[in-house]
Image (cartoon, rainbow, N blue to C red; front, side, top):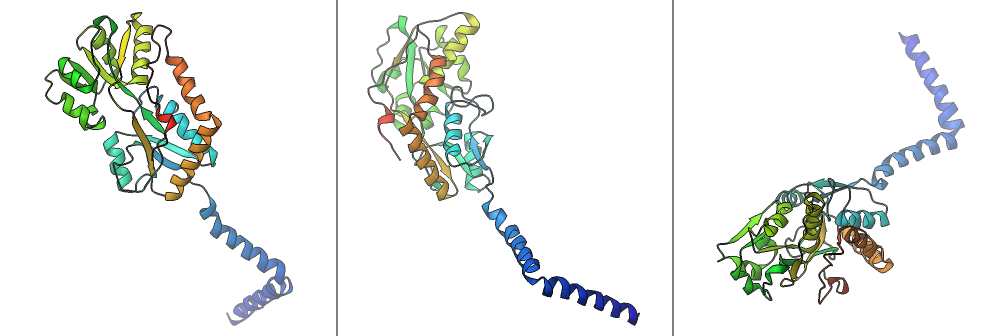
Length: 289
């Protein structure tokens, strides 16, 4: 037993002399470098950011958030600073709850004034909502108060997201309805179940195009500009991400890449029979925080 212990000590001593003493520089430098690499690697590794986004809403979010105007813009922004992202689709209420509980890194399509949690970016997306009616009806709709004269269908949550002026204009209207399935709104309008549809311009043109492809039916529409644009920002847990986001967004706008993404989808939607509604003011000309 004693001999065995003594032998083991002799072996260890020889190992120490050989590697720790006689080859000190190579042995210890290699060891220290390996330990340093192990300690630093996790800090330098970029983990994918988990971003909460809404359920598919063509042409903004399409094919389970693999493409669309909004999805492509966000991808391009994070590509600018080499950051991987993962889109997680969920209802708006749930995404806010998840973000407030710090269970996700960021949320998209947010009103900049809606929360104080985390940091907020400059606006990167806008929705221009119109009141749409059949051109053959020649409805006179010049302001929100005119809506009281018509039956209206809009998207689910419109009274919440389109502002207090819109809410006041429709709250006493017994013929006002909100529907989560916007794909049926064009048919409801064509068949005169409702006089007016209130919704985003590009969402509605997209729905009209798809309906025409399916049924062969097309009717000319009037787009009544009675609502201001809705500007949307992103919100992140890390202020550094907000800063990077705004820098990349500004670069995209300056280079023309932002316009290219929008134009690609707009050209796929626009019909020669239904030109885009023109706006007296474009939010692209005013960067709003």
